[in-house]
Image 1 (cartoon, helix red, strand yellow):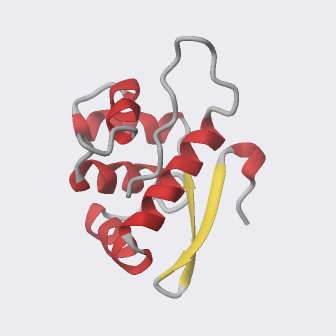
Image 2: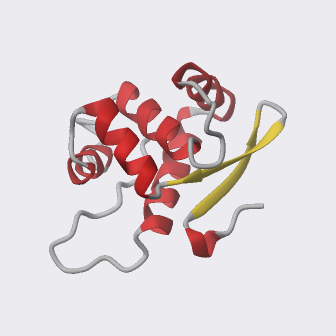
Length: 115
């Protein structure tokens, strides 16, 4: 079961339970996969005009890997297809907020849910 206090966000898709978590390892995986800093990723995710579907899938995949380490990026895309892009964006936004509940002045903001 997901623990919100530990930055975990639970949801159901494809007939099973899943957990997103943007911990240190997830952030590093996302940076490696995108070639961008996590702060840059957060900025892009918060800008509906600049965010790409590929970036959303990559962030979703990275956040899944904490609890589902064998999940592939294609499987992450299938999960997104099952729940819908808007719900995936909402869950990513929730995961960003859970990972960084108390933003300091000048720090990157969690992204808004994609439309």
